[in-house]
Amino acid sequence: MNPKIIKVVKVSDLRLDKNNKEYRTIEFETSNYKIITSEDTGENIKVRIEPRRNKLNVWQESYVNGEPSFGYDYQIGEFVMGDIITANVEEYQIPTKTEPYKTSIYTCIVLGDSTKDNWNKKIERTFENNNKIIVIPKHISLTGVNVNYKLNK
Image (tube, rainbow, N blue to C red; front, side):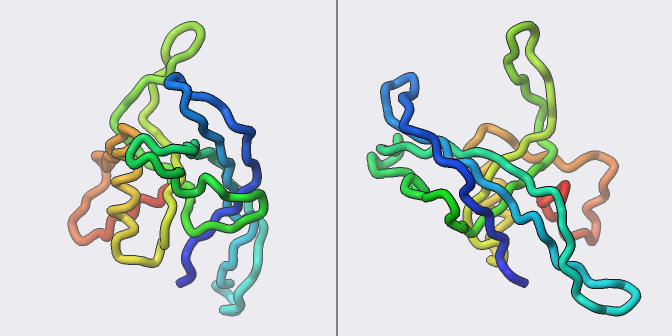
């Protein structure tokens, strides 16, 4: 199985956060093709699918170590190992101009090699770093099931 890749489709100009640290926003897109195997013929067929997009902020000087964030120098058109992951999470609020909107679905970019054994752990860590805890819906039994967080694929 090949690792998942995402493409850099947009890079913002430098911006300042509330602490006057410079950052930019990188927008990624999944492929708009998928190879599927025909149940009738066993033939591999390339089909078009709707690509998914999401954004990631990267700092010129990371809050963690003062170095540029991983991905700070990405360029438009560059391919990166990773995926855009959507999962059920503990309910949280999204502020709006009127009343906060409540949701329990979250999507983020997870960078790394999706074929490695630690991929699901990397997904969990990325969600936790975004203050989101992945939850398994109550109607799903985990007995004998290989839990895979890559929902909505």
